[in-house]
Length: 108
Image (cartoon, rainbow, N blue to C red; front, side, top):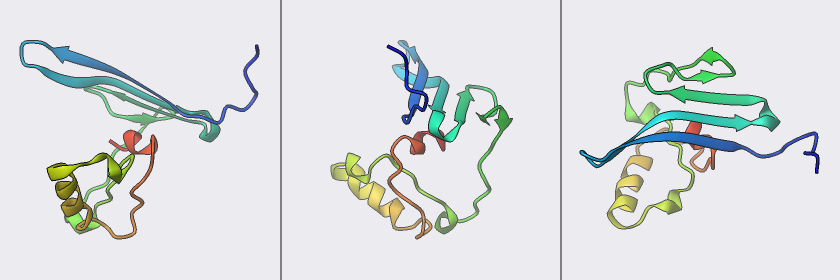
């Protein structure tokens, strides 16, 4: 069966390394493909993140009130984590979108 000409979904792929002796995970490679937007975000440990092959970076931010906060969903947090999230959420830029589904991952 042939694929449709226009694919309207996103795909996120991650390669994670696990160190058994210290019980920790760290991301080695992350790729987010968004065909509808013609975007490919690639993050590789030790290298600059790229968007469609061009280096990208975050902007400087001197105050928490100037920062943007992104999450897949604010409803992912419970108990103490929910309280901590709300404390940070209430201090960031008031106009920032807070529910971004897969887009939140590519901004890391």
